[in-house]
Image (cartoon, rainbow, N blue to C red; front, side):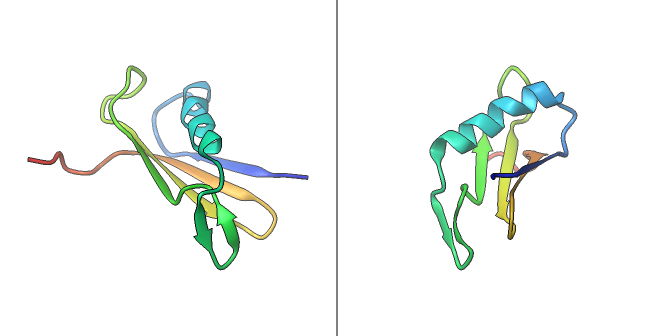
Length: 79
């Protein structure tokens, strides 16, 4: 059995957040850790129709689940 924990730390609705979750999961478990392979540590999505500044999806692998945290992109624009 697989378990996925989703933490939405944005103002987006959960249905909107699912777009980003799906994209991270499609990439597969590409980051290697001492816990085994997991979803990409951090995936940045630039500005889209759904959000103003873009979002970042952080991934963590727990003992019996995966956790994806969706946050606003607070990085400064590159000059």
